Image (spheres, rainbow over the protein chains, first blue to last red):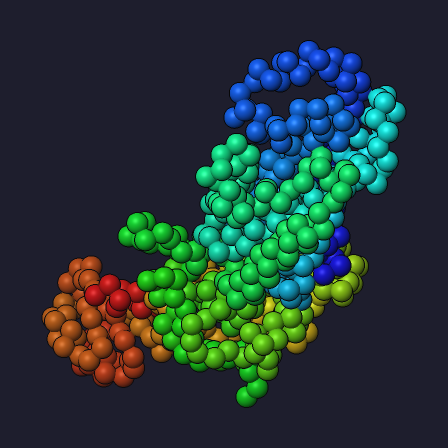
Length: 287
Length: 299
């Protein structure tokens, strides 16, 4: 497992630096703008009031406009509100490719022909994903901490770290969910598509539920409903955090259980097809 | 005799397609066993079942006295595998890829031996995998399969994509591995190489092993061609009625080409009654024997 983890981690350096540095720089860049925004409070309030509530719903709670002029409200509105959708794309792509990518390109066949248990391979790769995600979040957090020097925001490093715990739990949930889908569905692409649609649907339902009471029941099943964003700066909801991590653990167990029992495919071997497509023969034709 | 691997009634389906329909095989320890069949016959599926990469639907498997489904790691630790569809991480160098695979084996390989193997196959360890030709990638596959001196070699089309000189080098390495005590089970549809190194051959057709025999016995006991030249014109139809004899052609009134299946005794006795000026027999290649199984299928 150690060798698998080391290999997975080595391969993800580019991912950590690419996602972490770009979003970290964005975080650094956003911090000084808080002072500008706070200095124009009156005109900004008027401007925001003119926006339709359907638009404002996507940036967090619209009921209290004054919250936007607090550091946590500003960061929630300008940064943490859309982080789950941006980094959610990373989690979906990484989760779908954790095993299925190597399986589809044929390298998993060779690796698993070595004295490596499927469990060892699975958890080695999963640990690689967790460490990669933590690395990306740490760089973004560092961006906020560095940017703090150029603004009047006086939040501590720990306060700035709390939203990342909530964000990290969401990413674990979407990563593990997509991993489970990639073990159940015939291809990595299909798993990523289904998980990506679920991510976007969750974002829309959670946002629109802020202005539409009809969605109050449905939103309970939306993972992003339990994402705290900027609100976590002041107080982290531990139950929500553990709930998200618990669901992520369930998805992980499902994926592991399936990986332990399934055939390692080569070029689509052993994949199932949707009933409507079942007239086509599986493309296993390798002898 | 002790067997390195055994399969009994091995079945495997992919949806509605039955890839293996009851494969029975016994491969003896220390032998080179050639597994012949065209694409789609079930060779790769059989090999992948032996390493627990895919799970059979029925039947039993024993590899090195172990059940690959119960002890897959122990089986893989003692086996070397060359996949038919060989892929590496393209961003690694050859040496990096081999070192990674060696680490998965707990660093068991002697690196001096690895360098020697690479040298014999004219493989540059410093090259990036993505810059290698298909043939050179195959060389990396051969090295990784052999580098830890496994007890059992499972090779799926080992000489695919290699030029004739390297093919010979690989066959020599396989013979040397056998000489050191390894059992070699390799699939191929290149019959000349199977004929050259395999002590026994199994022929798989449509997911069933239709023949297992010593390579030499298989060649000896099956069809031969007999060219007969007579001193005077004869009626060749009289030979066609002999059991196992088929007249293939007559080049002129005194020359006859026949195909004889089984014993030659009947034909020789019949020929003795004619004035024969020349008699020549030709053994079929393994390729021709192999094709007879498939022609029977088509009929």
